[in-house]
Amino acid sequence: MRADIVSNEELIQEARSRLEQGAWDYLVGGSESETTLRRNRQAFDHIAFRPRILVDVSKIDPSTTFLGHTLRIPAILAPIGSLQVFDPEGAVASTRAATQFGIMHAVSSVTEPSLEETAAATPTPKIFQLYVHGDTQWTRDIVNRVKRAGYTGFALTVDVAHYSRRERPMLSRYNPPTRRVIQDPKYRASLTWETMDVIKDMAGMPFMVKGIQTAEDAEIAVQHGVDVLWVTNHGGRQIDHGLGSLETLPEIVNAAQGKARIILDGGVQRGSDILKAVALGADVVALGRLQGWGLAAGGTAGVVRMLEILEDELICAMALTGITSIGKATAKYVCKATPVTPAHEMSSWVNMPVDRIL
Image (cartoon, rainbow, N blue to C red; front, side, top):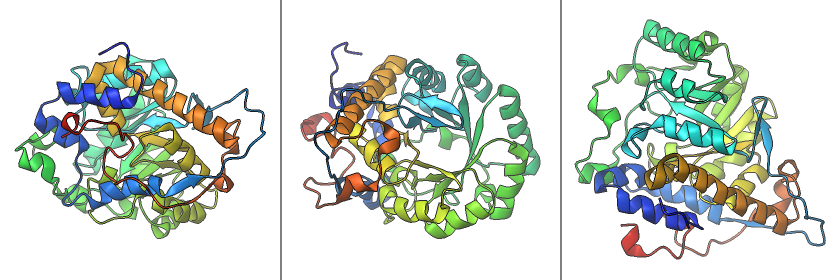
């Protein structure tokens, strides 16, 4: 990886130069028309800041706590399948980056290496994310492995009852490793709140439902004792023509009534996006595509550099908004506005040469 990268624009260009077309399409694409993917980004573009002046911002603290652990910034690395496509070390490279920088990694159940090897790579707390691909005993075996490996949080993904039509990789005739192993789809398709209860009881650790998109489901999750509501539409990769994650956040925050912590992912590309999400009620954001770009650009070092740039952007946004610590970011610092740029997966980087991203 180049040593002089100053913006995540450059990091993405480096990633693009290293990835084959199929892997690139797998990382950046959404489902069908990619409307949800675009709305994820547009939701952030629809929010503006209301900066306050003459505030002493000589000291800025962007850190927070989550699940009892300090995070350098209010972000975690999202679970991504097939991380080995972007770097040979796969999930271990991401975990090392999270540890070096000072945040948490949510490890996908469909990435390499094994959950045990990833957990053992660093001593810092990690979250395990599960796709259900088997019966109750299969799930119990996975949960027991997660416990023995020392994970401190458990996330159940619930927005993949049917695998979507992700047309960019389809057109490239690219099949990621997660799709090369035949899995019986009935297990994911038959998940219910009752199934979730069983898995939650098995896990016996802070439990997250990943795929909350409405206030109605947020209310039910809280009633079932879910500890963390993960607000996401799978990065625009599942349901097409859904709302952007940030659009749904306020109603979910209101439904939770402070009884559950909240993670948001989908469209987060800048440090200012993190500040907007926190101001609107998220505790932390999860970083997906940015993580993949960082890995592809330079493995562990690439992800660390991506996080350093995000932190610098976040501190800048906080200082110019008059917010000295992340806990002071509230809805009074933001408002709705008209977006000024086209919404797509690269709309945060207006200087990106077109030939570097296609």
